[in-house]
Image (cartoon, rainbow, N blue to C red; front, side, top):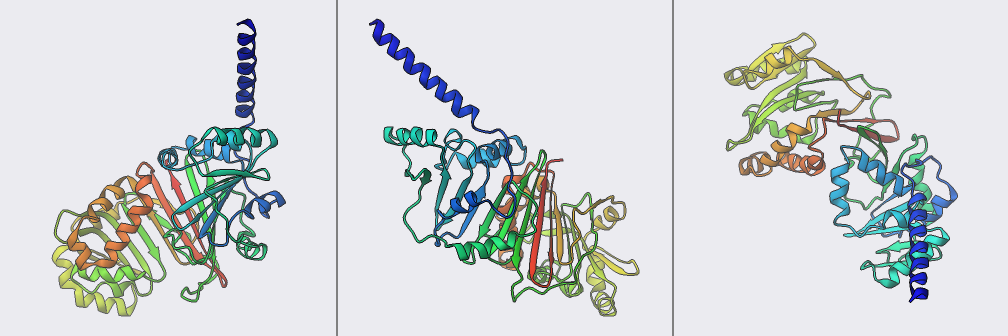
Length: 408
């Protein structure tokens, strides 16, 4: 009996020491990612199959997860997502880098293990983990079936987009076949992610597609009205602007043909056809002045028109013009030569939920309806954030999107 207790005690001591070691060698902070990638990181990416639509490289994955959980914006979405995924445990990864890729509906993972962790993970899998996983030549693979690797040449082509980008906490690469709605730029695309104490920054780069038009290098410094639910500034109107004619029952969309702004303060989503409260700010060109004269009686039935010299302001309600005249403004994070937008997600998410159930909007303004639905999909997990700002710019060869989500 004494020998048995001694054996149990020794085993408990070994297990306890092992647990302490695994936890002690799992970092609480991320080392970050720098370009170009290290040979070890490139070797890890070789596990990604050519069929992957998108893949991500996360250095010091255990520390990165701790960083996400410490950030008030990402904590909730990460906890919700990890509850539904077959993820490698933090103690399995330790300080190692992690690659994640998606092919169809399957998400797969790969990480290099140190010798001790490789032994422990093999024992863990033998006992029965309930996940589709294996350890091969020191690489821990989850949901990773056999497939043709992505190839060095193709990998180099995509990673070349990251040249010149600053260090980051993670990088995501989307191949040409990727159909993800974010980022709303061409494919292939490379996105870097930086997680701060109270904010998250995304920077996405893609080759300029034939459908996009390069703008002059540089861009204007922007200002956004602080009290707006949504404010958008653009040099060319997106196609969704054409649906404004149906909401306002007036041909207002052509006022924005040469660029302008849309300021939204609220939307009455309880009516058959939602009525937005806000303003259109257009350039005071001769053509726009003629257009305003043609629709003046319709606009002034519900709202106001103000000529500010270089711009013309139109509101389709009685309150927005006064709100705008007393606004304070927030400086934009970045200059832009294409488009920029700032959103208040605390107010926007509940409204987008209502708009998603509005049959009148779906029938009368299908582009606005789809845009509202897509926007809801992007930001519904960010309802607790204070602001979301995005700015896109183009050069002769690339298009670049920057996004900042802030809790303060």
